[in-house]
Amino acid sequence: MTVSEMQNEILRLKKERDVCVLAHCYQSQSVLEVADYVGDSYGLSVQASKAPQKTVVMCGVRFMAETVKILSPEKTVYLANPMAGCPMAEQMDRDLIEGVKSQYPDHAVVCYINTTAALKTVCDVCVTSSSAVKIIRKLENPNILFVPDKNLGDYVQKQVPEKHLMLLQGGCPTHASVGEKETLLQKDRHPNALLLVHPECRPEVVALADFVGSTSAIMDFAEHSDAKEFLIGTEMSIAEHLQFKCPEKRFIPLSKKLLCTNMKCTTLPDVLAAVRGEAEPIELPPDVLMGARRCIDRMIELG
Ligand code: 13P
Ligand code: SF4
Image 1 (cartoon, rainbow, N blue to C red):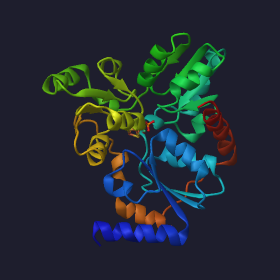
Image 2: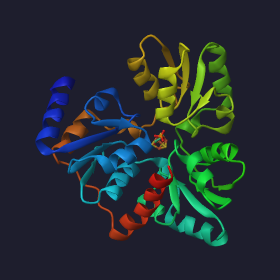
Image 3: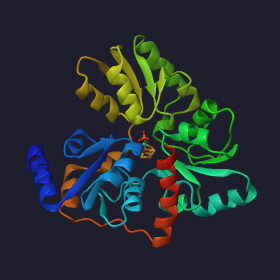
Image 4: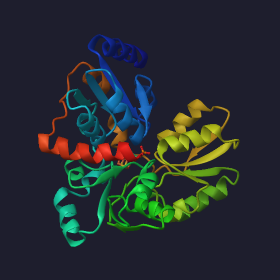
């Protein structure tokens, strides 16, 4: 089968079997082309509750498929490649957070959506990179334990100085791989380029940026900007997708280290197998479904 024959077979089966394919923007171009919806983590979680189909295939990482299951427990949800996990989501578990909570009972617990469903059950609200500032500003409690991403936490703290954020040592290994020196070198090489970065990047890289935002916000900014050249400080697929969208502009990945192998392990054959139902559906215990739902519902309500 060629790439386009496989894509056509996926499109045919989606209709026949009433399947919705959701894809995170970090997926490869061939996967994005067969998706019903492409977005960042926030967009995907909102879309998950709206999709009318009975089956959802998530092309992304495990916590994203869990979010779909939590919001639509009646649906059959497949993670297109079951090995795609987010390393940051695995860094902290429920026991660790319960331990910290017991030492700081006056803190509200806010988790990034990049966490397991089990961890969400012990948090008050979750946030995505595009909704974190807005939601944390709205919380009544001035003291917040924010997990797991300390870079995103640092960014939020600077935007919301009236709150006190307690941060732990977690983060995205992909975004945190780029340092200040490499960023300055790239800025020197491309003096006319605007630097757009994700808040999962290190604070010293964020400090050099012309724009900071979630994946979708970066894409939106680049598409609508009058500038012609951009250094893209997030997973490198975004530079490629932007190049397809705006061929008259130039998009340069900030670093070749900005590659998430978990996001990239989903292939078109994985999507075909999942659309055929040849995959293991996501299952979560009822107490986890309920506890995590409360946390995600609060995010949608506040965000
Ligand atoms: P957003 O989708 O919120 O931009 O987050 C990026 C990311 O790393 C997802 O895993
Ligand atoms: Fe996780 Fe980072 Fe990959 Fe996103 S880019 S899935 S946060 S490791």
